[in-house]
Length: 114
Image 1 (cartoon, rainbow, N blue to C red):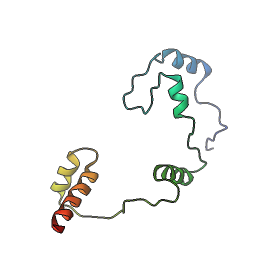
Image 2: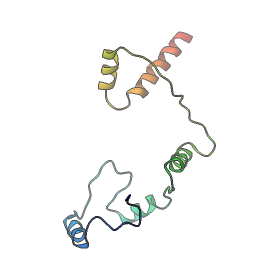
Image 3: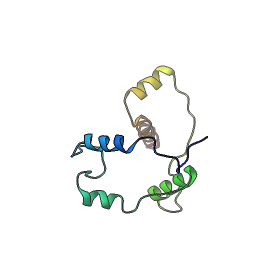
């Protein structure tokens, strides 16, 4: 039978207590959008959470919050073919490689207009 939200927890109360006892008192996470050690910052961050009952609804709410209600995406999805070595070199530059390609193409277009 498939588990659902009313299923019994998969860990015992003893296991939960042991996990909480082993947890650190302070968290150092430079990538966290707020200070997880400051209760006021945590409360402020989670004051207006996005909740939903389906993935489709969640995606819509996240997109609306990012771009504002009723605004379409500024990007257009497309397919482009690169030689394997070119694509490997682009991806090797790390995260954001697609944005960098977009910037290079924009520079190229602007240079051709002049």
